[in-house]
Amino acid sequence: MGNAYEVLVVDDEPIVGKQLKAALSKGAFNVETYVVPAEALKRIDEKEFDVVVTDIRMDNVDGIEVLERAMRKSSRTKVIMITGFAMMELARHAMEKGAFDFLSKPFTPDDMRAAIGKAVAQI
Amino acid sequence: MAVITINRDSYSMGKVIAEGLASELGYKCIGDEVFAATSKGFGIAETKIRSALEDAPTFWGIPLTTRSKLISCYQSTLARLLLDDNVVYYGPAGHLLIQGVSHVLKVYLQSDIEARVQLKAKTEDITGGKALKKLLKEDKGHSKLTSFLYGINGNEEGLCDMVINTGKAGMKDVIRTISVQALSKRYRTTTYSVNCLKNIELSFRVRAALIDVDRDVSVRAASGSVFIHARATEGKRQKLVDTVRNAAKSIRDVANVEVIITEDIFERYAETYR
Image (tube, rainbow over all chains, first blue to last red):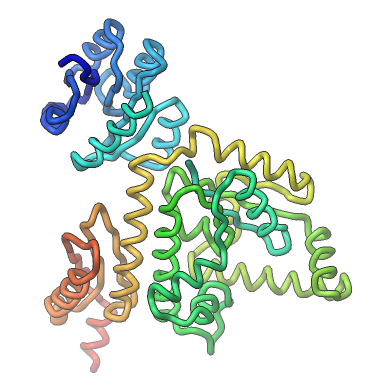
């Protein structure tokens, strides 16, 4: 796909990446999914993504670390944080760190499509 | 970008600061409009709603069930109006009515008693002594109200994100300080925080509709699913579940209903002795 947006999804629950890939496949997105955060970090270092969707609580690597790494690679990358443990303070912390949006799990495909749509509109 | 709620001691220049802030940020400023919108939305007289939120409880005052219903209606309306985003709200109890929403910046304005007395005396054209006496009485009534309605005994400012003494800082500085915070990344609107507001709006709209069925009913909404918690004796359980479910299902935006009933032991013992 020539003008497709590059999206990376990292979540240690395989179902999340699988569902997001399916939800975004109808749009102009190239989606790469990772369940091992360290592999996602390595890929972020190699390639500039338009949007990174990351879980916050994962084994070994924190979602905030993914956010910081993605923004260090490129300030134009929009990072969307997702979590099953959403709380007001966590959302504020993620936004303060530079996240573009914050969603609680489970989210609807429409919510995620809307969030990614807003993100790419600002690139 | 954000929603700001201004809560304050009386005569702390809250409304003036809210209006100045809204003008500075280009936000909408709402206060009394929420009473009017609640009245229109639920078909209840505005005076009754105002009384439920502002009058301290008295023995002959508004019955608790009625008050809870009126406050739920107000709470739901407020959440709906805040969904417009870019709003400054200066009406009653914003910090208590809307909780857990990350893009809502809760500000508490304090002022020294001397400054408040001076302003009250000037506004009402009374002596300083009289103004002090009236202020202390009003503060006592306010504490009684927040304790009765929200279970808060003092330290309301502890529930806010910012506490500012308006007597020590100039008006422009206060407005600038709040503006800087409101525009910071920390208070940006997120999909999660908008959904939290939507859930509050629906929860309290459903609660207002069910409160006549069970005074102690509590409702939690999550993306159209509502979880209703009520109390009943074993014998009345099924009837209550059916009544509550049918009533909730007919409410706009409600997709699924789950009713959780815990046993009302007081009612059970009362029945034993009847």
